[in-house]
Length: 63
Image 1: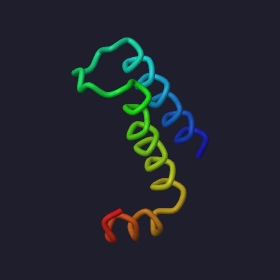
Image 2 (image 1 turned 135 degrees about the horizontal axis):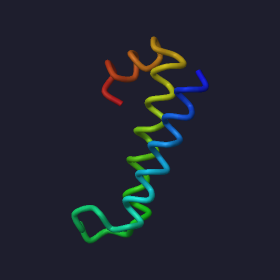
Image 3 (image 1 turned 45 degrees about the vertical axis):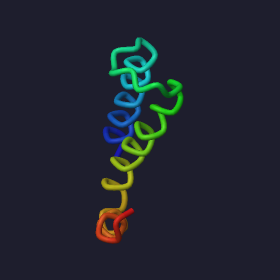
């Protein structure tokens, strides 16, 4: 479990660095807005490893 948490945290940190370094296609929105889907993605990785049935239910329901 620690590897999953470290991996998700590292992915979030690298993503924030990339967003802060403006290495993305500029879409006319503030940079903090781009961190929201990144945070959801990293949280999804944690939920998938921690509670696979809950994540399967969320995916099936369309959330």
